[in-house]
Amino acid sequence: MKTAVIALTNEGRELAARIAGVLEGCESCELSGGVVATIRSLWACFDGLICVMATGIVVRAIAPLCRDKKTDPCVVVLDEKGQFVISLLSGHLGGGNGLARKVAAITGGAAVITTASDVTGHTPLDLWAAENNLRVQNPQRLTGISAKLVNEGEVSFFSSVTCDRLPADFRVVTEPALADIILSHWAYDPLEHPDALVLCPCNLYLGLGCNRGTTATDFEQAVSELCAQYRLERSAIAGIASIDLKADEAGLLQFARDNNLPIRFYSKDELNRVEGISPSAAVMAATGARGVAEPAAMLAAGDDTTPGQLGQLIVRKIKWKDVTAAVSEKKLTDMVQAPLSKR
Image 1: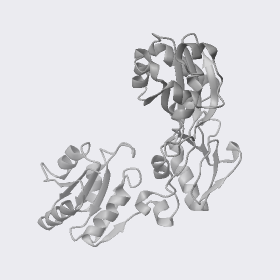
Image 2: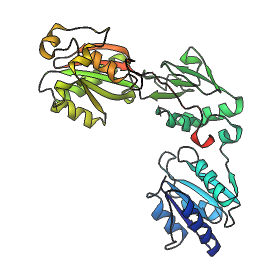
Image 3: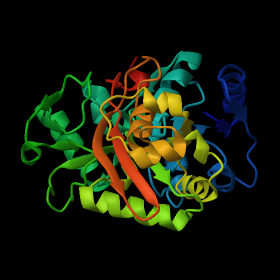
Image 4: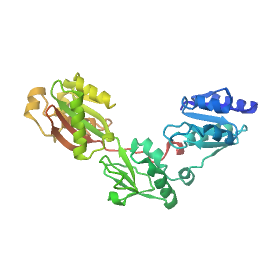
């Protein structure tokens, strides 16, 4: 975390210098043009701001700058004696709670954390989702579901994805209609589940085959139609894969760049070792592989730490004029149960 520390008084500046000397990635900054002007100049440049001064001054300075907890830097405020270190803004996603604890350890003071999940020991849903690379489809429900978790001690959880190590305060249910939280790479319309928090994992891998000279537009149209036909969340796609003969295919590479997706290529021997695919005589004649889209998707969704463990094929190959596509699901393992700041 890139952090700036500022102070208002001489004693405060001494404490700021001590914090900057110990805290990794922390820079002590001079006030330039006053507190408001200084904070404004630092706001977009740092992940966190540590302010050694009165809380009221900081609140008035940051009020016009606050936009979104996903993008605002965290703000920590402490007195010039370092007795109370307050996590003021972006405590979870921004790392403010963890930063407050680190600063308190330096000053010998007490970290003041007011987020309910930290105080009660329940799972902070926004941080849990972020640490497990789960995308929140309807963030307006985060506050309501988090409040229910704190008030009732647990929330109901439905997942269409194979996952393990769920938090202890999640109660698994078998129907999405019964769930406070829905985790799925299938497209769940939040309007159909207005009371649920909908999360999308990033665990789908596309296997793509194509004719020579296929354009990025052709790939885009095929993938869009595939997601619409099978009600797949486009944001769940984590990567794409193909045979190494297509490593120089301009349209395929452009499609990967346009969608900011990593792409992997496999040899015909690697593809031919995958069982349970739909073989194609035409593909074998052209490439020497029994298939491309299905085995490439399964290999890409496999567990790199466990040789031979492949992803589960959830959409078998579909053919367009110039594109063949298949989709495989990667199992969600080793899910983080608690925020790193609590460990």
